[in-house]
Length: 69
Image (tube, rainbow, N blue to C red):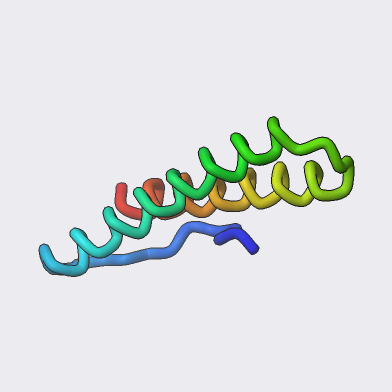
């Protein structure tokens, strides 16, 4: 499940910002791995699930980044 909307973080401290950066990085990494797995997968249903998971992870990362702006 992806973070569908932006979140208003308002004023956050440096430690919270570092944690958010780590979360974004982890979601970007998940997106890459799911995409790689999907490209190697032969089963159509599993391939679709992995592709959707990759998209969800990337959407979450993108929305978190946009929320920090």
